[in-house]
Length: 394
Image (cartoon, rainbow, N blue to C red; front, side, top):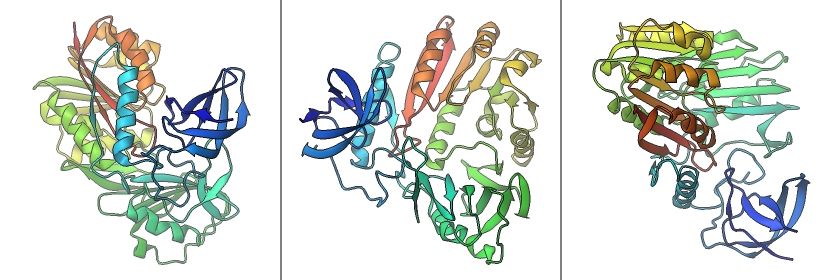
């Protein structure tokens, strides 16, 4: 029996119905007809896989990556980049249709080799990604989403004697490499690491070679980034977003940058700031932020270590602009309550999860109205979308 794919879900999977139960099928496109096998059954839904294609979409293409779709690194490489943008635009406008119609969407200037960070799993000396929704390792030699400098270093990792564990590879604007390795194996560092421009290796949070950080550049600002500090993974889109945020902030603002990481957004907006405060829970990120304010000559910045919900009400200023870039889970109830009580005139919300953003906007609309909203393809060929919402006090 054949089934027709009606649309894609929020995770890039096709949707059909089998025996009146919603069924999700990866690696499919709207209007395709397939036969399928059920691979996972739940009380409310099913997950399946394509057995055969009865009718393929004219928008289907042969993926560039030889590991697709077994590898779980991306979900949409079976169609053109232009079509992934169309699919994501549809998705984001459906999510926010009752809050803000016709959201502007910015494609990535570089849809391939854009990632400045990847994390590979290691099992029995083989490196790769897990297959989607499993712990089955798919060994890889390169990733089409990763920066060329990252791909260059992958063959080296096979020589370092990382038997089992995990490796995070970061690179910067200068193609320098920072490695963070979680493994109990004794590493072999006899290779010439300078050939790969490796500036540091950290194993189990201990520096075993070089430094635990490097410098990156976005829009002429310098950022020191530690091995475990958060930083946006697509520098091309990050550059655009930082400009859009800065352009949304009034001159001489007192800015509170929550979940500030290494201080990147606040420092990008520092020319507009009379005073700048940052709050972050990761100690290394706070140390980076302090250094980044110094090297970018931002003298009016101060940073606070701790949970946002515990620190936010201790800021000694009447804040008029709040920037939030929370984790995927969004804002907690106490933080929303405190922001509403602070009632800054401008609230800027950057989010990597449209669903949690919508949830939080419905709560914030008690005192705020949306001035503008824009989506960005921070993560090409994946289902993920970055959103930026500018809100003003009613």
